Amino acid sequence: MKPGSVNISRIVKETSLKQNSTDFAVCWIKKEVDGIEIDSVLYNNVSNSIFFIDPKYQWKIFKKDNATSSGYILYLSNEVLNNPILSNLHINKVRLFNSGEIPLFKLSPGIEKRTQAILEMIDELLGSHLNHKDDAILSLLNTFFIYCDGQCNIKSVVSNTNSKTNVVYKFKKLVDKHVFEYHEVAYYAKLLNISPTYLNECVQEVLATSSKSIIVEQLLMRSRHALKFSNKTIKEISFELGFSSPDYFSYFFKTHTGSNPSTLRKA
Image (cartoon, rainbow, N blue to C red; front, side, top):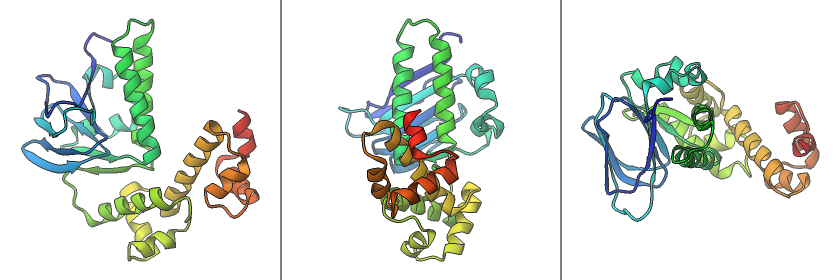
Protein backbone atom coordinates (compact mmCIF):
# COMPACT_ATOMS: atom_id res chain seq x y z
CA MET A 1 0.00 0.00 0.00
CA LYS A 2 1.10 3.56 -0.64
CA PRO A 3 1.83 5.68 2.44
CA GLY A 4 -1.36 7.38 3.61
CA SER A 5 -3.71 4.92 1.89
CA VAL A 6 -5.20 4.10 5.29
CA ASN A 7 -5.49 6.61 8.11
CA ILE A 8 -7.30 6.42 11.42
CA SER A 9 -8.04 8.90 14.19
CA ARG A 10 -10.02 8.87 17.40
CA ILE A 11 -13.14 11.01 17.81
CA VAL A 12 -11.94 13.15 20.70
CA LYS A 13 -12.27 16.80 19.70
CA GLU A 14 -15.46 18.77 20.28
CA THR A 15 -15.73 19.08 16.49
CA SER A 16 -14.21 16.57 14.07
CA LEU A 17 -14.13 17.72 10.44
CA LYS A 18 -13.68 15.92 7.14
CA GLN A 19 -10.08 15.96 5.99
CA ASN A 20 -9.27 17.73 2.74
CA SER A 21 -8.81 14.52 0.79
CA THR A 22 -10.44 12.26 -1.78
CA ASP A 23 -10.52 9.35 0.66
CA PHE A 24 -13.68 7.57 1.76
CA ALA A 25 -14.54 7.93 5.45
CA VAL A 26 -15.81 5.26 7.81
CA CYS A 27 -17.05 6.90 11.02
CA TRP A 28 -17.58 4.45 13.87
CA ILE A 29 -19.46 6.24 16.64
CA LYS A 30 -19.55 4.10 19.77
CA LYS A 31 -20.35 6.51 22.59
CA GLU A 32 -23.14 8.96 21.89
CA VAL A 33 -22.19 12.22 20.19
CA ASP A 34 -24.39 15.32 20.02
CA GLY A 35 -24.69 14.97 16.28
CA ILE A 36 -23.15 14.26 12.91
CA GLU A 37 -23.76 16.70 10.06
CA ILE A 38 -23.53 15.20 6.58
CA ASP A 39 -24.09 17.27 3.45
CA SER A 40 -25.63 20.08 5.57
CA VAL A 41 -28.12 17.73 7.27
CA LEU A 42 -27.73 17.24 11.04
CA TYR A 43 -28.51 13.90 12.75
CA ASN A 44 -28.77 14.30 16.53
CA ASN A 45 -27.71 12.05 19.42
CA VAL A 46 -26.00 9.28 17.44
CA SER A 47 -24.41 6.21 19.04
CA ASN A 48 -23.40 2.61 18.22
CA SER A 49 -23.40 3.36 14.49
CA ILE A 50 -21.07 3.11 11.52
CA PHE A 51 -21.41 5.64 8.68
CA PHE A 52 -19.81 5.05 5.27
CA ILE A 53 -19.30 8.44 3.66
CA ASP A 54 -18.35 9.18 0.06
CA PRO A 55 -15.63 11.84 -0.36
CA LYS A 56 -18.08 14.09 -2.23
CA TYR A 57 -19.87 14.82 1.08
CA GLN A 58 -18.79 17.37 3.67
CA TRP A 59 -19.33 16.23 7.25
CA LYS A 60 -18.73 17.17 10.90
CA ILE A 61 -19.08 15.33 14.21
CA PHE A 62 -20.03 17.31 17.33
CA LYS A 63 -19.47 16.21 20.93
CA LYS A 64 -19.35 18.05 24.24
CA ASP A 65 -16.97 15.82 26.18
CA ASN A 66 -13.48 16.02 24.69
CA ALA A 67 -11.89 14.02 27.53
CA THR A 68 -12.74 10.60 26.13
CA SER A 69 -12.95 9.06 22.67
CA SER A 70 -16.37 8.43 21.14
CA GLY A 71 -15.04 6.12 18.43
CA TYR A 72 -12.88 6.17 15.31
CA ILE A 73 -12.71 7.80 11.89
CA LEU A 74 -11.13 5.55 9.30
CA TYR A 75 -9.99 7.02 5.96
CA LEU A 76 -9.58 4.66 3.00
CA SER A 77 -8.27 5.41 -0.48
CA ASN A 78 -9.65 4.01 -3.74
CA GLU A 79 -6.50 1.94 -4.01
CA VAL A 80 -7.27 0.15 -0.75
CA LEU A 81 -10.93 -0.51 -1.58
CA ASN A 82 -9.91 -1.92 -4.97
CA ASN A 83 -7.36 -4.29 -3.44
CA PRO A 84 -8.14 -7.92 -4.44
CA ILE A 85 -8.62 -8.85 -0.77
CA LEU A 86 -11.49 -6.35 -0.44
CA SER A 87 -12.80 -6.01 -4.01
CA ASN A 88 -15.09 -9.06 -3.87
CA LEU A 89 -16.83 -8.07 -0.66
CA HIS A 90 -20.47 -7.06 -0.65
CA ILE A 91 -19.42 -3.57 0.37
CA ASN A 92 -17.84 -3.08 -3.06
CA LYS A 93 -20.21 -5.24 -5.10
CA VAL A 94 -23.08 -2.89 -4.33
CA ARG A 95 -20.78 0.14 -4.57
CA LEU A 96 -21.72 1.02 -1.03
CA PHE A 97 -19.73 4.24 -1.02
CA ASN A 98 -21.11 5.47 -4.36
CA SER A 99 -24.80 4.69 -4.11
CA GLY A 100 -25.99 8.28 -3.81
CA GLU A 101 -27.07 7.53 -0.24
CA ILE A 102 -25.18 7.44 3.04
CA PRO A 103 -25.08 3.88 4.37
CA LEU A 104 -25.56 3.35 8.10
CA PHE A 105 -24.97 0.20 10.13
CA LYS A 106 -26.30 -0.41 13.63
CA LEU A 107 -24.10 -3.02 15.30
CA SER A 108 -25.24 -5.76 17.64
CA PRO A 109 -23.54 -5.66 21.07
CA GLY A 110 -21.22 -8.64 20.48
CA ILE A 111 -20.05 -7.28 17.13
CA GLU A 112 -19.51 -3.83 18.62
CA LYS A 113 -16.77 -5.18 20.89
CA ARG A 114 -15.06 -6.98 18.02
CA THR A 115 -15.27 -3.88 15.84
CA GLN A 116 -13.53 -1.81 18.49
CA ALA A 117 -10.77 -4.41 18.82
CA ILE A 118 -10.23 -4.46 15.04
CA LEU A 119 -9.98 -0.67 14.76
CA GLU A 120 -7.63 -0.53 17.76
CA MET A 121 -5.35 -3.07 16.07
CA ILE A 122 -5.39 -1.08 12.81
CA ASP A 123 -4.49 2.06 14.78
CA GLU A 124 -1.62 0.21 16.47
CA LEU A 125 -0.31 -1.27 13.22
CA LEU A 126 -0.35 2.07 11.37
CA GLY A 127 2.01 3.50 13.98
CA SER A 128 4.36 0.50 13.90
CA HIS A 129 7.30 -0.60 11.76
CA LEU A 130 6.44 -4.29 11.78
CA ASN A 131 7.16 -6.50 8.81
CA HIS A 132 4.10 -7.34 6.67
CA LYS A 133 2.01 -4.73 8.46
CA ASP A 134 0.20 -3.83 5.19
CA ASP A 135 -0.98 -7.41 4.81
CA ALA A 136 -2.18 -7.42 8.42
CA ILE A 137 -4.09 -4.14 7.96
CA LEU A 138 -5.83 -5.40 4.81
CA SER A 139 -6.78 -8.60 6.61
CA LEU A 140 -8.26 -6.61 9.49
CA LEU A 141 -10.19 -4.37 7.08
CA ASN A 142 -11.55 -7.49 5.40
CA THR A 143 -12.73 -8.81 8.78
CA PHE A 144 -14.19 -5.41 9.69
CA PHE A 145 -16.31 -5.24 6.53
CA ILE A 146 -17.48 -8.85 6.89
CA TYR A 147 -18.68 -8.10 10.42
CA CYS A 148 -20.44 -4.93 9.21
CA ASP A 149 -22.30 -6.95 6.60
CA GLY A 150 -23.41 -9.63 9.07
CA GLN A 151 -27.13 -10.29 9.31
CA CYS A 152 -27.13 -9.36 13.00
CA ASN A 153 -26.57 -5.75 11.96
CA ILE A 154 -29.17 -3.33 10.66
CA LYS A 155 -28.27 -1.97 7.24
CA SER A 156 -30.02 1.28 6.39
CA VAL A 157 -29.35 4.81 5.18
CA VAL A 158 -29.26 7.89 7.39
CA SER A 159 -32.17 9.48 5.55
CA ASN A 160 -34.35 6.38 5.81
CA THR A 161 -37.50 6.89 7.90
CA ASN A 162 -39.22 3.80 6.54
CA SER A 163 -41.48 2.28 9.19
CA LYS A 164 -40.36 -1.28 8.39
CA THR A 165 -36.73 -0.33 8.99
CA ASN A 166 -37.73 1.13 12.36
CA VAL A 167 -39.62 -2.06 13.25
CA VAL A 168 -36.57 -4.17 12.43
CA TYR A 169 -34.26 -1.94 14.44
CA LYS A 170 -36.57 -2.13 17.47
CA PHE A 171 -36.83 -5.91 17.02
CA LYS A 172 -33.03 -6.22 16.98
CA LYS A 173 -32.70 -4.17 20.15
CA LEU A 174 -35.28 -6.38 21.89
CA VAL A 175 -33.49 -9.56 20.76
CA ASP A 176 -30.18 -8.18 22.06
CA LYS A 177 -31.85 -7.56 25.43
CA HIS A 178 -34.04 -10.66 25.85
CA VAL A 179 -32.46 -13.47 23.80
CA PHE A 180 -31.15 -15.13 26.98
CA GLU A 181 -34.75 -15.76 28.01
CA TYR A 182 -36.96 -15.77 24.93
CA HIS A 183 -36.33 -17.54 21.62
CA GLU A 184 -39.72 -17.27 19.91
CA VAL A 185 -40.65 -14.70 17.27
CA ALA A 186 -44.16 -14.36 18.74
CA TYR A 187 -42.76 -12.97 22.00
CA TYR A 188 -40.99 -10.09 20.20
CA ALA A 189 -43.96 -9.43 17.92
CA LYS A 190 -46.16 -9.06 21.02
CA LEU A 191 -43.72 -6.55 22.55
CA LEU A 192 -43.88 -4.56 19.32
CA ASN A 193 -47.69 -4.80 19.14
CA ILE A 194 -47.61 -6.38 15.69
CA SER A 195 -48.28 -9.87 14.33
CA PRO A 196 -45.45 -12.39 13.85
CA THR A 197 -46.32 -12.43 10.15
CA TYR A 198 -45.83 -8.68 9.81
CA LEU A 199 -42.63 -8.78 11.83
CA ASN A 200 -41.24 -11.45 9.52
CA GLU A 201 -42.33 -9.41 6.49
CA CYS A 202 -40.40 -6.39 7.81
CA VAL A 203 -37.25 -8.40 8.57
CA GLN A 204 -37.40 -10.14 5.18
CA GLU A 205 -37.71 -6.83 3.34
CA VAL A 206 -34.98 -5.00 5.28
CA LEU A 207 -32.45 -7.78 5.90
CA ALA A 208 -33.45 -10.45 3.35
CA THR A 209 -33.70 -13.08 6.08
CA SER A 210 -36.31 -14.34 8.57
CA SER A 211 -37.08 -13.11 12.08
CA LYS A 212 -36.22 -16.54 13.48
CA SER A 213 -32.81 -16.50 11.80
CA ILE A 214 -31.93 -13.27 13.64
CA ILE A 215 -32.71 -14.95 16.96
CA VAL A 216 -30.80 -18.09 15.96
CA GLU A 217 -27.77 -16.08 14.83
CA GLN A 218 -27.66 -14.21 18.13
CA LEU A 219 -27.86 -17.48 20.09
CA LEU A 220 -25.10 -19.04 17.98
CA MET A 221 -22.86 -16.00 18.32
CA ARG A 222 -23.24 -15.97 22.09
CA SER A 223 -22.86 -19.77 22.27
CA ARG A 224 -19.60 -19.73 20.32
CA HIS A 225 -18.20 -16.93 22.44
CA ALA A 226 -19.07 -18.67 25.71
CA LEU A 227 -17.70 -22.02 24.51
CA LYS A 228 -14.42 -20.53 23.28
CA PHE A 229 -13.74 -17.83 25.86
CA SER A 230 -15.30 -18.89 29.15
CA ASN A 231 -14.73 -21.69 31.65
CA LYS A 232 -18.45 -22.33 32.08
CA THR A 233 -19.66 -25.88 31.56
CA ILE A 234 -21.87 -26.70 28.59
CA LYS A 235 -24.69 -27.24 31.07
CA GLU A 236 -24.18 -23.77 32.55
CA ILE A 237 -24.04 -22.18 29.08
CA SER A 238 -27.20 -23.96 27.95
CA PHE A 239 -29.25 -22.71 30.93
CA GLU A 240 -27.72 -19.22 30.71
CA LEU A 241 -28.88 -19.00 27.09
CA GLY A 242 -32.41 -20.02 28.00
CA PHE A 243 -32.43 -23.62 26.77
CA SER A 244 -34.56 -26.11 28.68
CA SER A 245 -31.78 -28.70 28.89
CA PRO A 246 -28.16 -29.28 27.84
CA ASP A 247 -29.37 -31.97 25.42
CA TYR A 248 -31.67 -29.52 23.64
CA PHE A 249 -28.86 -26.94 23.49
CA SER A 250 -26.55 -29.55 21.92
CA TYR A 251 -29.27 -30.49 19.41
CA PHE A 252 -29.83 -26.82 18.52
CA PHE A 253 -26.11 -26.14 18.15
CA LYS A 254 -25.43 -29.21 16.00
CA THR A 255 -28.47 -28.54 13.81
CA HIS A 256 -27.22 -25.07 12.92
CA THR A 257 -23.45 -25.59 12.88
CA GLY A 258 -22.96 -29.26 12.04
CA SER A 259 -20.90 -29.96 15.16
CA ASN A 260 -21.47 -30.49 18.87
CA PRO A 261 -20.67 -27.80 21.47
CA SER A 262 -17.97 -30.06 22.93
CA THR A 263 -16.28 -30.29 19.53
CA LEU A 264 -16.03 -26.50 19.22
CA ARG A 265 -14.70 -26.24 22.76
CA LYS A 266 -11.87 -28.68 21.98
CA ALA A 267 -10.96 -26.97 18.68
